[in-house]
Amino acid sequence: MTTKDKAEFLRSFKVLSNQSFDLFLGAGASISSGIPSGRDLVWHFKREILNSGGKINGKKFQDLKVEANKKEIQSFFLEEDANVVNSYSYYFEKCYPDSLVRQEFLTNLVRDKKPSIGFMCLSALIDQKKFNTVWTTNFDDLIERAINKLNISCQAVSPENSKLVQNFRSDIPTVVKLHGDFRYDALQNTDEELQKLEDNLHNYFLDASTKRGLLVVGYSGSDESVLQTLEKALNKTNAFPKGLIWCIPKDISPSERLSKLLEKANAQNQRSGF
Image (cartoon, rainbow, N blue to C red; front, side, top):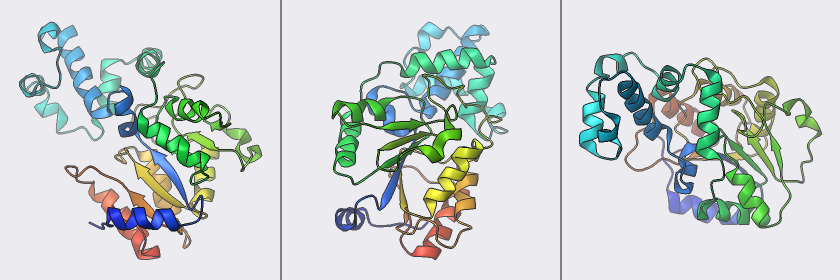
């Protein structure tokens, strides 16, 4: 696995010119604001499937942090899990087959959440011009809420308005919602919907990849649309000139595909790694 020393990166980040990097945030960044991770939601979906099917009494499994509860729930899914590639999207769709219901579920999950201190630190970095563009697979509005608390103007790009992306001003902080925004988009959350980014956003990302580095936080790299776009970006000889830095928790091992992607990035610029 290609790794970079965290302390060394932080020293370099302070010295590098403003907006050397874009930031990419996944669901893990929103946990501290009270939004469950995709991994936690899988346990919710499994419990609801079993409860509605009469296989368990859901009231006895309210606390999904308890290992005994998870072990009991998982005993019903051992064979099924062996054939599942993306547990989140698979069990989300199995639990709530209707796309309207899934959208309502996500809206209720993210509405009116307050930005954690991490988002406030991000808004301070944006105010100091260290970042100008934040990409995210999240549906919530925590990034914009944090930025607005510092009375900074920002613009949000999502599939809903992506046709106008070339007209957006480069001097205004930009939040790019790759899978949609709960306030006005049809949200992308199943395997079928996550196969491909919307064309304008896909091309917008590829263009940005040749100009700056990318710092990834709270994202597992589990959906096809983003991985395909990253792989396509790395076919360019000048991809992520300041580096592709992927932050992962100490107890998490990246997939083989993701590891190969970081190896390829580092082979090009000697500045990339986990």
